[in-house]
Image (cartoon, rainbow, N blue to C red; front, side, top):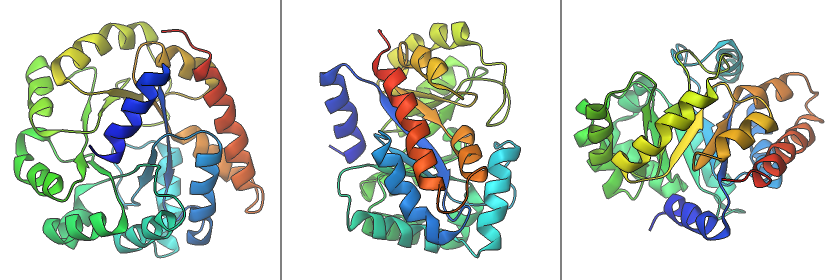
Length: 268
């Protein structure tokens, strides 16, 4: 059982849902990334999604685009992201880390080499936004041989055929994109999410996390009432942007603690 699967199993026995915060590795500066990962754990993170900065993050809105630009300006790369995870693992052997990014850096690195180095660094899952599941059987197999969960996206426009494809090659959890738009967008239809989640869970047979458009504890609590996990990213990056370097970790912990408390008060 992977660290991700163990985490969901433990939360299920407690009647709790996973909180999965996202930050971009290297933003606002590579030296702050490890303190920010610690701050996420202190705030109640169950799993960390660590963004691999990329110059054309097509699924991401302006906030995460800015984060990628800042990280790239400081020379952040996929190799440096893996080194960051390795440093994190020296002090935290429990919290799963999922790398979220795009195909180009992985292809440039080499899929087999990436799987090997990611496993050695302590990565638990990989979500490559622009790898469609119908073309990813080989990629998924490589990740699974390295004991890394290949995680896939589903969207409001996804068909039941896509659900079946993801169920066959994915593992760990499913990331359900809650709206038609980019990260940080508004217009989150909570009723539509509530209608979709039971069918997705039945079809894919693994936990379902919901992200995109979740900006506060009240919304996170409503999502937690129907889903297995809440993913929140742009709002955290806004906290980082509005804080000084010295204050950023404390601001992130304080914000995330509020979200965690709201989720734990939610009743399924």
